[in-house]
Length: 307
Image (cartoon, rainbow, N blue to C red; front, side, top):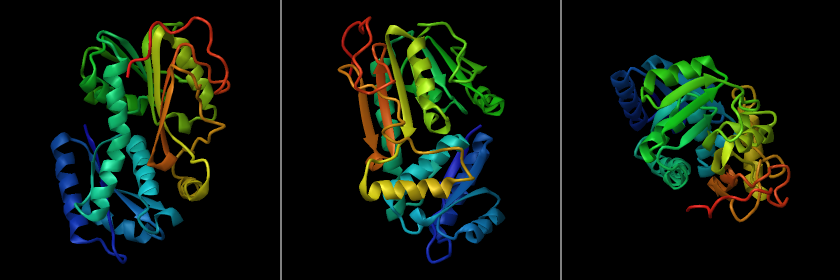
């Protein structure tokens, strides 16, 4: 079952024909896959406008706040990326307008970077943990871009796991109800620990990454992506407005530099997107997230990091 997210562009308080065509296409795609079509309306003071779309037979999500009064690429990209993760969307549709042609490539950039990492870090036959798997979107990407031997998807939400089980039938994939800050698996049981856009929903994200590092083998990888708070300037101001817009609608916050789990060493990497609103990190077994500049832990990585 596939969830289709349509970015419902609006102009001067109305939905143009291009938006209605996109919604029709989203409904058709959702019907073919047995899924749901969701229309996302971003803007300021758009609650009433969003309600009009319900008449077209789609679920509607309004993201209302000052950062969305006009199209700001970074704010819109971060907002739609968060909705994709929260709603388990597998397809994102936008009209072929200037907004749509700018937004979708930006949205894809974060995932395409992750997808380049997967074949570099996941060897054939590897045992992989997907922590905070949700509806299994990261697992689907993993199976497309690498050849793991076993994948364990864990999440606290049984509803999300039911959706993941329905759409992923690969016999290599199993699912389990687990708290990713207190995982029950033994040390060094996985080759790779993967987590996408989950850490920012946790009160203590470092605790989860400590668990990931505990679980990987000595030559293993930890890969995670999260929504981040830019360091300064207008980007940081946009981020603050973005967080206020989400208050009460999503269990989510941007991770600032002092809160984000990271260790800066020769074996790690940190890449930011959308002018600092999204971050992808790779760590190795030698890393500790207590402080980014701490020395590497003893028991060095076997060999150099690929990629």
